[in-house]
Image (cartoon, rainbow over the protein chains, first blue to last red):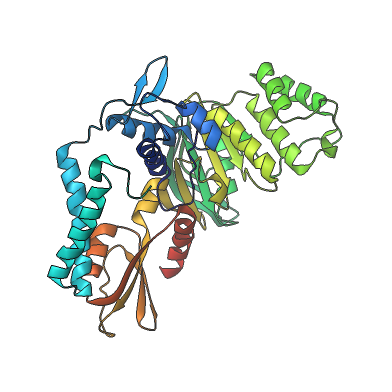
Length: 137
Length: 288
């Protein structure tokens, strides 16, 4: 599998695994219904504690991104992601708060800020927005 | 989901005194079934003595120790009888062990590519280390203690060893305790770790908590004479011209929020990887 982690990164290993699998799904490297390596197999391949991998898989399963069929294996979900709307809202609000704090310290003109936001939003939407490619991929 | 976890090793206020010298003091920790625990610290911090205490090779002068199942111990010296052949050592260990897993031993010997006819003394340091660990694994321990697992090994051997240890952990019931001076090479396999400094435990927790709690903030405040209060969670402050480096070890979010509100020309949060966090923990001791 394509997962490659840095054990000495400031990003927890389980989080890196989650991000890479999400990214793989977003870019088409993994297609819905594709089989993932089992916890054991991935642990052996990348030399990471199976507990860490199990934790990543649990969270991905909880969010509906992967599903495990007992005795068969773990697969990329064909159903859309099941994160609650509340969670989505909270995550976005958190990032906006950080943006506003930075703008405050930069003493960035408010109207200008709104214009920049609109510009970037339109650009993103024209590339498909939430249904399109992941911006960071 | 909460899971009840079985304790493999429990230490409560363990202390060791030798000839009037305090080797270990007030060590309390637990290692659970199915986890990899690292005992970190500089040379002379007490790691080897603690491993030996768990193994029962050291006299504990204070505290209580409880071990739930069979232990295996790999000493730092990896001492074997150099004049014997590998097969002779195998026979010796087999005879001395209560439980000997012959099929596992043969399988592992094959994996590490050592011939039974080889003389132990002629083996490279790396091969000898692997042999020692293989012999220990064949005694079917449930709890494996290794002193300096990666020391003196070439890179390929490190990978082979990692693979052996991960196989050992696969059934979810075994426990692994690694004593090491560095965390870099084992960061990928450990669940939790403890840091020893001069015989005392200065940290005991998970890798993820450690990297979540520690960070540095570099701030260039607009006013040169701004006072950064001594908040709980800030363990170090360094001024470097106009910039201030703030070292944080807890309540990271609250402290960052507080610092961000100080009028500034520059503000940056520097997260730390586990190796840097470990170094900070040792450095913290110097600030106290």
